[in-house]
Image (tube, rainbow, N blue to C red; front, side):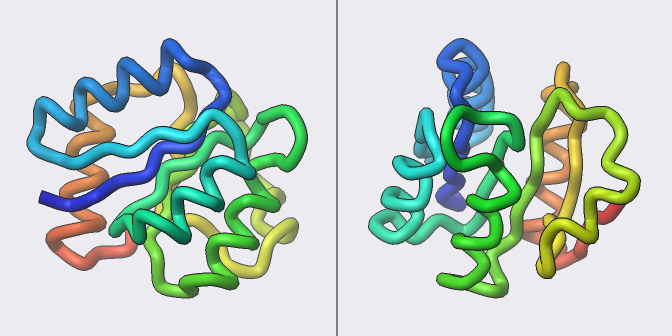
Length: 125
């Protein structure tokens, strides 16, 4: 199955999502910071990235920009407590494929991952 990189500073959330995705057969790699996420992205070459926006240090928007400079085609799902993304698209030049507001539904997450990875569809807001 596909390799997924999950970047979030909340350890409990990382473990919950990793365990769920792993139970679905995915190989989930976690990172607790943007810097660690970028390093693991370069090393592990995942097929999908999931990234939080509000993190200490480098935020998720900047992390997405760096990752997209490395691989413009990588699908990205934003997972964040931000519920209103309206107007945020102007902050970055390459928007994520999908946004999910925390708390997330694991079933919706699973469907989104499957749709992006295996159906080749770009899921948008």
